Image (cartoon, rainbow over all chains, first blue to last red; front, side, top):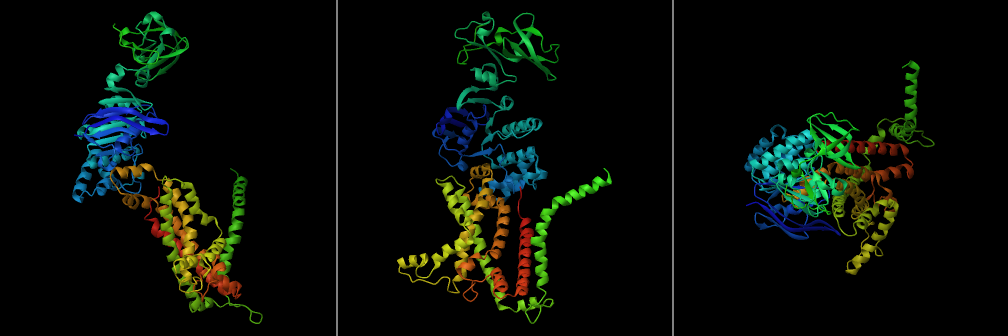
Length: 339
Length: 294
């Protein structure tokens, strides 16, 4: 049993509630991503679970045991820090073994775990290097190896990929995901990068200002955003959201709806529909993003491949009624319209 | 590039170097060479002019009991002050690096002895050490203990001066350790905490090794200071009683300006310079290999 369950978690910094009554659970052996913009409280939640901060309210349970007041070392968690937190004066080997030595694991067992972990992350030939002699990706692997040798059932990751370049990030993302499944780890992963969230998570917890905005599988969040914030946070480019008053009022008609959202990939160039002017054309190879303007409001459309459209052109965009998301004045989703 | 402009480039370079070169040669290199040169001559007087005697001054130095006395005093002074003040400095830095109320006041308090001139420090401690009326004897008197002439007793004078020097130096070294501690990333401590490392274990395996560059710097300074700091002797003891608190540099001063034997003073100075150079190099090469620099 190693699932995580948190109930009504609160953390206060002076007058500011960094974490405001947050509750969710992470199933054993699954990967949950805490996603949100910076300052939304995601790292604080992770640190509360690790025990590096103390909660001002609520409970943390790991594997059914209440660990809210337990010492970090006894919570059966390992953690990977954004900076990796490698000890700069110790070589790779000593960095990996640090925790086992503290916990007085005997030497032969230590050695066996080291060999196994080094093999899993491909560090066998680098065991005697100092962190300063490693590349960013290799340092990340040392941090992962530290987690592997600890054999803790729960792994907490605090933006582990944000210091890597784009190519390496994709590679390490796969590697972390593979390790998580292979070792059947219960993993809580903090990031502000929606690509990491979408591609790895079994469950995404989207946070905003210390509260949960929406929680669910990545596809659910993408296809059924429960708020304007969720709709615009997930997806690049973000969803187009326009006040109903600014477009042809007959397009939609659900009760209480004030804004209409359509994802850029769902916009079609058409002969009739919403008249727009092309402000810019961003060609990206496999796709082209058109930046459009309708009565002073920006819209984006994503079309496949190359397009003949040029800045300054006027054209029309249309969409399928099934692809429309409606939000009320406060940005909450209005019940799906029957098509 | 023509030959003229090439020459001009050299002229320009030398002009830039000149001010520093003049100062270094005039006040460091020339005096050093002159000192060694002087030490090869006998003491001159009105009837017997100074003459070249080679290593003669060095030979008589080897037979000078006061030289050996001040050298061993200096050794004890260094052994007495350096480890204790460095350990205290680390301890104080660790203490004021934590979040605690009145932290900046405490930092200032620890640093105060450093900003005082050595002469002022000596005057303060003269008041502490005075027999009968001094602070220490008054405190002892409260408990009915007899007073003691701390600076007048050959057995206690050197320890008394060592204590005072530690008081003066520890705060200074603390500042360097504090700066180094504030450069340690807090995640290191958190990573250690998650593994259950005790404070002492974390200090021994992580903090102390990462402070080694600071420790080397502080040690070199401390060793140099143990030979360089003699201001307090002028106020407190003048090297007495019976040279019990005399240190090498003060002995050089006495030789030159009380006994007017500048040639012997030059000899002692050359030896002091050699000792300092050897110590600095030894520390540098021995410790450097074991230090992790970021």
